Length: 128
View (cartoon, rainbow, N blue to C red):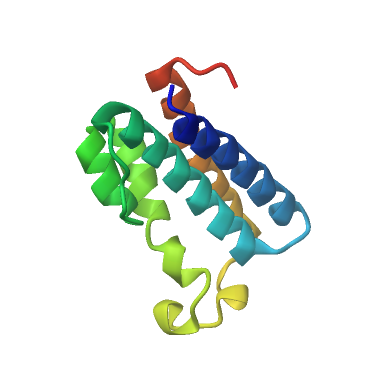
């Protein structure tokens, strides 16, 4: 596996752990952002390994389509993709991001991200 792929995977796992910790302390918008980031980095790692080039998009749907992921992973990517912007920018969210997300929403996003990372592990035969 390429060095950059290993780094992306390690950071994806760290981002997922960060999302979980932020959920625990009630920083729901930030938890959702890190859930999206974990999925993005994990999908970019698969893209790098399979396509042998870097993906420069932040669109998880585009990445999922390019990779031909299963339906459940595609659904997760589609749900997570808008959060790249809506968790950070009031104009993208049409609201204050910190007030937009609640515990249930953050938990759902964390679980969606976990679904993506679980598929990546299976797809590339990764241990942890």
